[in-house]
Image (tube, rainbow, N blue to C red; front, side, top):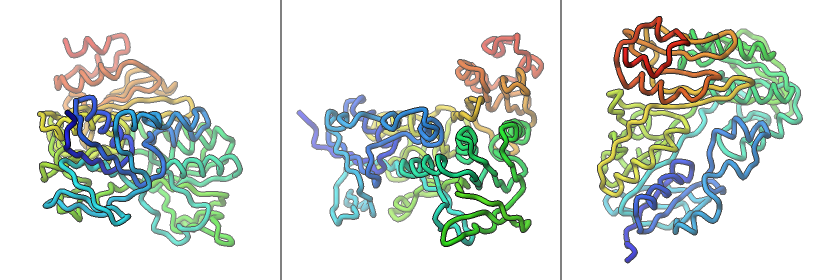
Length: 411
């Protein structure tokens, strides 16, 4: 007999789609309603700044499931709809079309939105943000027609767009407020690797620079003015200055919000019938011993299985180590682990940094907190083992490429 229970998932991105899949895999036979405010079925975001933006992959490859999957698995996929309220007492949500929908369990996978640049001219034509599929397709057209691009923000999105633009023959200037791109994430030792990478590919890196205005001509962006008074000419501007978790719905409902929706290690909120997953979830991590919010693909991919189990009232804990990756020019890398700013005392390199074929380890008291492999593959699991072992490791052994990683924890 089919269950009459209704589980609702708000947010039809990767996390929402994988939650619907996990519920079916874990045996839930009730009603699943997956609601998204975009017109597209769920898709993955990394290709938007990597393969799809560069024209190396087809549009159809970005989607999480084939179109027929949702009907085949009896998932009520509602696109182009927004949830505007949650009534936790009566267990129903309000939609922007005036209807209401009851739920037994609710998952918030509402994701995040780009931070807007708070300067004059920021709303002009020719100023672009990259978050949604339509954004990517507009920027693809821009890169095919413009000759000068200014990228404001030297984070992952900004640098990936920069790499694609340079490979398309576009002249690119990166404006970054920090002294090095990615320095807040990687520290100066590894951030310098990315600085050199982009400069070697002809990028004008304006570091320690603040954009104070978008210069316009006939309502369209024509340049970027810096705090120094310099103006950089541009045919278009891409802004990548971070994202904000979409917590408005949770906050309105009285859920605990602090840099995202606060959830326990099983991804439940302070309401036992509501969970959260993906970019929006600030989850307690049992190995790290603190709450963290991770804005990367792996969380959206992997957290939903835990959330689904908890929605089914089964014991489950999410303790995967944070993971992300990037592809820029000839540099491919994977990063696993978590280091708070200033939370390490040294970076140990194994391999050839100048040739961009190395592993970097962030360490404290000779314990590995995180590792990043650059153009070296199939070592992520070994790095995870080093992190989880929590054993002090001889720095010289860690730096020696002739010593297999899987032997270091046995010393």
